[in-house]
Length: 154
Image 1 (cartoon, helix red, strand yellow):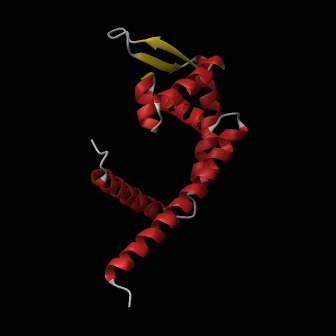
Image 2 (cartoon, rainbow, N blue to C red):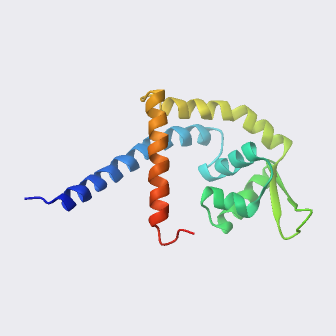
């Protein structure tokens, strides 16, 4: 006989598997689109943050994308060498360095972002708008709960 605790564990493991496979499937839509225009997922994520938020301290970009500072610096170096962004020091605290899209970076994002959003929209087309709203609420609740249980939670 299987006890309640075992059932909960099995359900949680199944949920994790379904969640991971679903994320992988949806993410493949996003990645496929950006790879065709010459970006890897991390570089595109940096560009997307700057596209939506404007100039950002490099340290905050890494935190938003859950990347280590060395990885962010490497990606920013590559994007800067391609002319898509530039760095500049903060006027109030010169220890803080901002990254910002150049006019060329803005132009590229203006050009490719609509296709990217269509790819994402297509990936979620299998569920209704109401179901998307429900899923957003459930995933936020799950994320907050997992954060609060984490020993690394601040």
